[in-house]
Image (cartoon, rainbow, N blue to C red):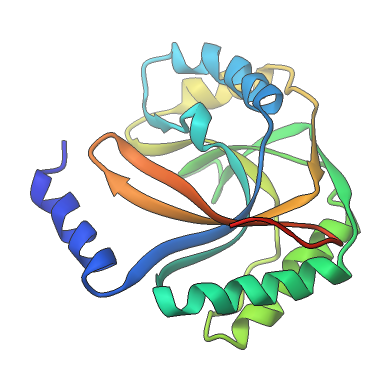
Length: 208
C-alpha cells in the first residue's frame, strides 16, 4: 500500500500550487452502474491482480485533462457551454468487451461499442479542438468510447480475459445528455470524483 507521504505530496501539489486533476465525461445512471457491476462480479471471483473500477467511479470519459491550473476552470466551462449549445443529444450502446492496448499485454479491461454515434464522435472532436486553444494537447488516438472495468496491476490475467470473452456482454444504453467537468482527488481509499459543473447538451448549464 502506498505510503501516506505519497498522498500528502499529491495533495500539496494540487492545492498549494493551485491545480486540479480534471477530466470531462458523461456520468452514468445507477441502473447502468448496476449492470456493469453484475458483469464484473463473476470476473472478480477469479484470483488476479486487477484494480476493479468501483461502482461509484464508473463513467464515460470524453477527454482527460490531467493537472490543470484552477484559473482555467472557468475557461473550460465556457468552452463546454459553447460546444454543448451546438451539439445534439444521442445514445450510445455498449455491447462488447475488449482490452487496451492488446491481448498480449493487457492493461485495461473494458466494455465498448460496436458502433459509435456520429454525434458522440463529433462531441469528442469539438472538445479536443476547443480545449487545444486553452493549451491542452490534442488526442493522438482515435476516440474509442469505453467503460473501464478494471486495470491490470501485474501478473497473469488470462483466466479473467477468457471468462470475459466467453460471457455474454450486457447491452447497456447510455444517453448523452449532460457533459460533466470532473475533479479527481487521490485519497488512501482511491480516487474521489467531484463534479465541478454539468452542462446540458444543446442547453444551458444545470449545475456548478
